[in-house]
Image 1 (tube, rainbow, N blue to C red):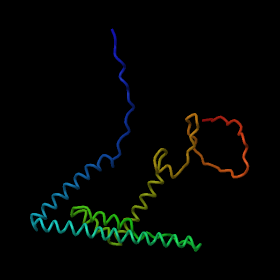
Image 2: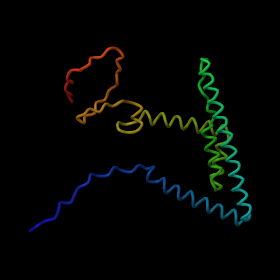
Image 3: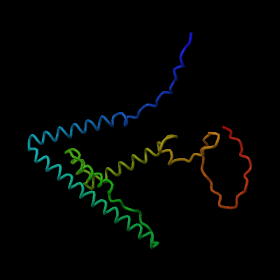
Image 4: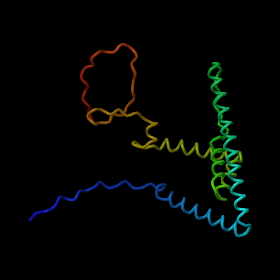
Length: 190
């Protein structure tokens, strides 16, 4: 009696995050809602009105993005001039340029819900609230970073040894004269 090759066993796949599970579903629902709302407005006001709304949103979004880009470039050039003149560099202000560009991008996307979100992001108090929330969330995620995640890269340095072991620690740079041949390494006791 001959048997075939043994069936390979695969390790269990890691569980998908909630974001990876629900993001495609959320995007699909958002697209369906945008299309439904556009057809509803087209039925009430006419197709030409919807076309004008979409063109106006695109034009307004491109103006907003251009303005935010110019302001960001101006802030960058001022910071570079301060650094070249050895003047004390003040902490750079972004003035919400990233959120302003995001608002312009949302205005440029075809759809009425994205236009409403884009217009909301152009209001300064909303920009401040969103930026504070994003900063707090980012700081919390960095603090909660577990070993092996991307956020963990900000928290610690890992040294990979040739034998495959990973040693956590920090790199100490010696600028003085060094031995031409270092001695044998001490064994790892883990």
